[in-house]
Length: 229
Image 1 (cartoon, rainbow, N blue to C red):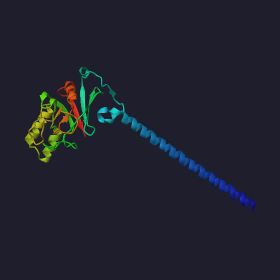
Image 2: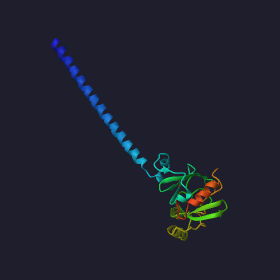
Image 3: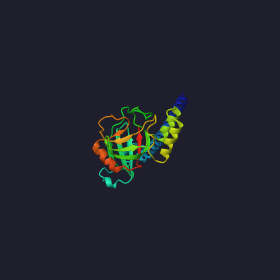
Image 4: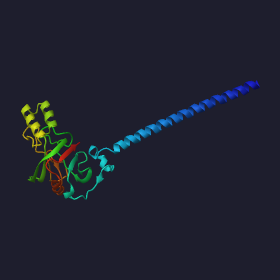
């Protein structure tokens, strides 16, 4: 009986030791998995952190680009404009340096891309400055080459414009000319003054007059401007 008890005690200890080792092995494996996942997340975060500032407005806040709001207008040589409708902000970059930031107002219908004349929406996508007007109804203004080829293609498929109108818009887009503004798509989309206190335009981007005066000096014919939701 004593031998039996001695054997049982040792057997229990051995089984307990095996259970403890297997538990530690699982813990070590879980810890390793967590570390691997953490490293992957860190690498993904680092990859996001190196994204171009043009690709994400948060990059401005994360310090991916340098900021130089004191750069003289005369020193801004290659401006690129970015409008973020939801944030009501326009950013001006010069060689990946954020040099200006302006408050903006939008069309009365703030959500969605412009589809047709009279919908009150500010168009979205990539545009260029195709005309500068120093004496418009709202002071200085910059005309955008809306409708673009993308808008024309969507309108053609929807039956809003004819094939001839599509070809006219396409030719103007390819040659960087002012596109037709007399189709069902509408036109005459400008960046102009008048105030950024509210969303009050028919689809244009509005700045405060003092900001527009400065932007008018910065932007040139052909300056790219991207408008995002």
